[in-house]
View 1: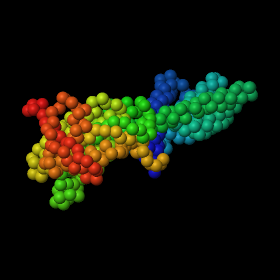
View 2: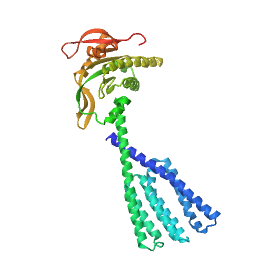
View 3: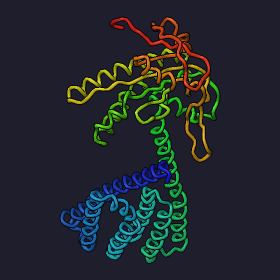
View 4: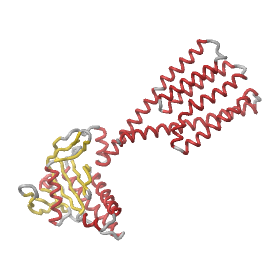
Length: 408
């Protein structure tokens, strides 16, 4: 099942529900105003001809109020209430107008008002966001209108004109539901895309990517990759209830991802108790190496704050290791046609992972390669930790750890 399609369908249903609720409110207001005017006409101006229809007007107003109350309490009822235009408003209007026509001194005027109402009701049916319902309203309104005024308009031309006017109006307003549905679907799809982007990119980066609307296929570029994970997580989790383990990971990931996004990093994926993050893709960041190191230092501070909270609750604190390397990698939408993922692959990513593993050996929480240190330059001071052998690779690599003066 496609979650994006589900989201669009839900948005369309919600749009129909909201429109139905608005229409229900309008119906209540209009029917009760109509009832009030009937009462004024009968009791204030002694217009006896309105008294014959007052009972049906009261029934109509009560039905409108009951429908509004029912639809306000149930989502299903709200969706069903959008069919009230052809199956409540038009029949009730027929009954009321038929009575008024029989007792009206000017039936031609009353008939014209009736036809005007059916045109108005046809326009209101477009709020259902269902083109088929517009045509149902058009057919029913045309039939009821013709039957209602058959004895009033002896001119066949007038009746044909009314039927044509209803048809043209139905064809015109019938485009509104499709247009509205397309707008809602488009907005929903953009929201789905925005939500997905927010999982991997900082808000600013996500907004820029959304405007580009295409991340492209995999291409080579220079990036700074950061691998991090929790030290001794397996041992730590042995003594925790599964729910406690999930709570720990959620708190840890929340703190780390917030820091990553603050420095404009891209979250590639969660790796159980670790994170794969890189900089300079999909948007270029000339200072990507500096961002990566400062992000690691920010993660160190976030961990200190998180551990302080855990100690206050009597929980055991834990440490993390972070490895950073800069170099060429393939970045873009990679994978099978039906299952693509925006990710980075290549030796640079693998080496960053190996450097993270060295943090345990050297007893530090952050290690960077000499390639990172060269790109950072004088922005951050580093302490040389020597040449290290890299598992699975020939040759050795110089690694360093960032150091900051007090207060930096």
